[in-house]
Length: 397
Image (cartoon, rainbow, N blue to C red; front, side, top):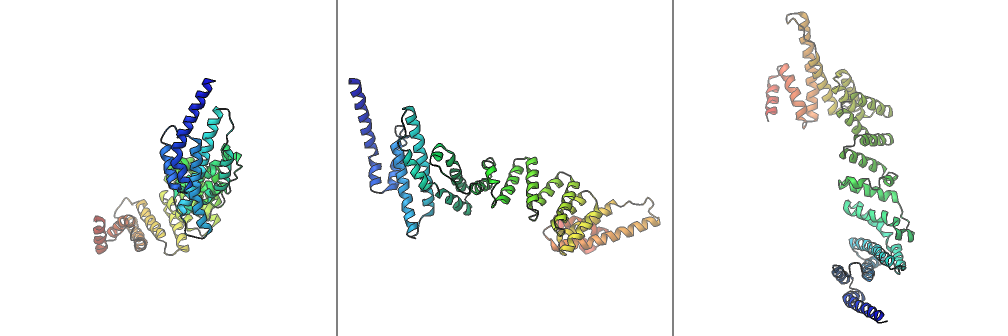
């Protein structure tokens, strides 16, 4: 009996100490000074004795709820309100409610007792959790990747927790929220997080193009060439009109030296749209790299039939003509008629190249590294004195 009274006295003593410690919090809550209450809670939580105190968690929920309800009332009355405060306190209510549930269950499990605050937690989740989705969309539209990820993760994860299941939380637009998380993670270059909700994000209809696009760029950043090609192929098959996926796929195979693959891809794209200038451009690159200059010129002329002032087309025609000149077989005897014919033919090629490359220069003056070296050779071969001097000076700059 004596032992019992000693334990009871100790319990009463601890309770009295806690009540005294909590006095500034309860006083602030009664006065509706919720910010002050939160400051006092923060101070108390630095003490290991109160860090995981159930009652303090309840007070924290009440304080955050008080701040949120104040902003909500302004919205109802159509007054100016603090959007950031509204969403941040919404987040904190849900976070504190989950913390309360976790701490209480852990404590009561050890004591083999049933939690007392479950109803309180569930009520708060039902009331405040739905607004987390609004926060996700708000921060996504503001291009705030960090905050979008923070709110989206809460929105997507909470329903799967034990208390989320007990509360029967039913998130809406799971796929869209997962997609916004993925896009935001990509914007932050947080590639590991891009994959967190990938399977859900892929099912988003409204974000599907962006999801595939960002997943492809992520695969490229992760040096996963197989995934990169697969994603680009998937995107191209689903969105052949966008040209984005086709061009990147063609560029990938060009860099790999697989020019025939680029030509095949281009032919497939042209079968879908015979006026797709980007497909002809890809063909030009591939044929030029293969040194199939005649085929490159044909593709470039097809580009010009669609766009008469296409700078790239003029470049590829001019550069291909220069390539054909380099590939010409020089006759063995310099005095022969064959050699004279060779020189005349060479001069004609230079003149044709001159016309194309000067047009390219006028259309793309910023591309000096492309047209200057070629025009240098042309002007030298055709003995264009003033033009040669001008291009020589340009190349020295």
